[in-house]
Length: 450
Image 1: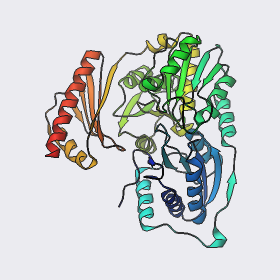
Image 2: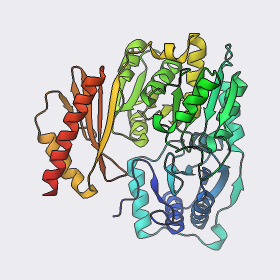
Image 3: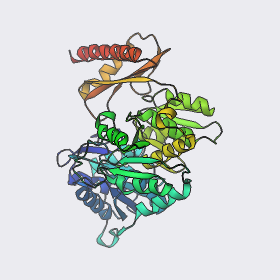
Image 4: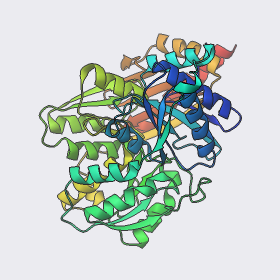
């Protein structure tokens, strides 16, 4: 059976790996999976190929007997919210998130607003391979439209308090769909908002979409030039957030998650925080402050959601700045993350850099090495058989926890590469751990290739 789903959803270069024909088959497969009935919400980001793929998925759903609620241009967390709000049986978002404009993707969601679990993804793959079931002309589904953005915005603003401190915020939405919500929400909460890259443009001319420091230097400079209190950046579908402090320094995604969690969970007893093996130990520091517990999973939003569904939890998140507020929407919500960070900053009555200093500092090194997909299992086996001085965890790849840091060697779920993450309390030790990891990786890849 051909594997279609990566870390989360089906993704690829438009008209090469991801085609309208495949999108139709996925829509029909979803309808078949649902028993050829039910209502499915569908939204898309503003990529130039979005309408094409939306139309193909809708055609498959209608042919399979499902009614469709078209939400149009929609951030991913808004789609998740809308599934429950409009009482739908499933959802689809057309987005490639942080990838360049030549990519697009299709993600499937359950009736609870959470992404499909791995088992359901495998069932969809099986139906695509064998062929979905169409219905007769008299049972073809109906297509309607709804304003999801307004419904989401109203619900969010009813849920959180207005801030009592006037903050100047620069918001960089990357010319993507986050600009439909985040600047307006922050303004309603009482912030002075300066927008950049907030004109919708599916070629994303302002910057690369992944919210990482190297892509956000213009945001950092703008924060300083405008005398702003902070900067906020989203990826292409606004399910991730990164923060720039008042000096133009970028906080890592782990730390954005940490401060959002501290604010969101401040009144909860023994909160359960779910994160992945790739996330900083700063989350453990947060749990200690809150007298809570950290549970680690494999990398990927579906893994975090799966753990939540099995055993419960209060908040989830990843090292990339994606945070899940389970009693709000069971998906990564960059908009709510931005709001929670702003609320935390306003309440602290300090600057972002001062707030950031209240948690222990860690240094990280992230590297990669090319590794053909077919060699990944062999490389992983070799790494697991080696002698390591620290505590070994094999939930996802190889994680080694040392007294003064940790190292993660993990095969990518979407690219022919192996990733190396290292973290320690000093830059020197983080570099040493990364050097150790890359040396072991190179050796394992070379042996596996021979």
